[in-house]
Amino acid sequence: MLEMLAKTIGAAGKSAELFVTPDGTRLLLLPYGARVLGLFAAGNEKNFFWTNPALGKAETARDMFAGNGWHNTGGDRTWIAPELDTFFPDAAFAQYRQPRQLDMSDYVVEHTGGGRRLSRQMTLHLARPNRDVGLRLTKWFGPAANPIRHQRDPAAVVGTVEYAGYTQRTTLQSLVPGTAEPAAVGIWNLLQLPPGGEMLVPSYARSAPQKCFGDVPPESIILEDHLLRVRIDFTGSHKIAVKAAVLCGRAGYVYGSGDQWSLVVRNFSVNPSGAYVDVQRHDPEDFGYGFQMCRVDEVEFGSFCELEYHAPALGALPDPARSEDVSQVWAFRGARMAIDAVARTLLGAGL
Image (cartoon, rainbow, N blue to C red):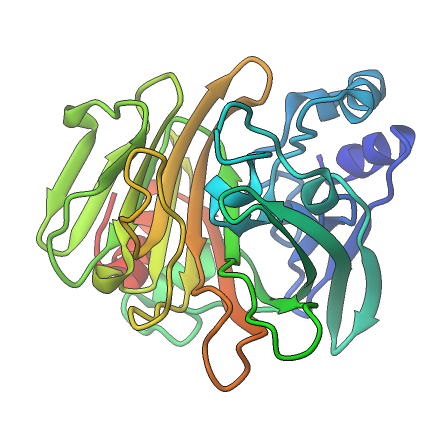
């Protein structure tokens, strides 16, 4: 699948960058949109991420890239929050539009620091303040060692599961000249994963998720004192959010069947003292959300599940014009019992 994806991307007129880490993890980077399109364990061609079925053939891939709508290729991407400001042309919120200069433009690729750096300078329009802001978004991808490599119990698990992982360092910088106050915008990272799995979100305290849109069936949400489970056994498009104050800084998604199961974990920083600025149209004063789960099921965009997290917005000392976020993605594949053991180690909950 790795080779097929790379060939399809090339045949559709886009470039792809292959990055291999010391442990054999392979990342297929797409400079168009600065995405990690594919994450592959050593010796396995199966992608841990969801990719748009349009990338299955060069003709359909070319049609997608030539279209006027969202060129949703899949994988791991970065957007800019708050969505109410950056994805709507004006405060009337009558039209939703993915910013082409953010997600559908080429980024510069550099080989640096033992990894790959993708960067782009852009101007975004913010709907509610009705102003344009200049921003530079930089993403560096490098290795991430297997987090369970030193586990002794159960020792057999480490050798029986496939592993792939990477570190992502995301920097957002305001290009507003002088001492002008930077816009209240922040880094928003999103993983697209196959539907039909289960989201596991550890927490310090029981906290019911907030509805963003749609209606996740109540029976699909299991709320425990220190864990939120969401079974993606429903169709349609729905989204929920969790406050940063209760987040432990990890979330996982498990999917599979039979003897082959996969677990994808995002390890991210949480700072409840920071300004988490993403809000919903029905309550634009409800701040503080650091994690979101989105189920998308649309003919135009595809059918997938998203694991999303936010970083605090620009404006914090000592450098109000700059924000840097570091996260890791850890992915495992193996028998159900082995993946259950990994999930218990990293998330405090099994399958």
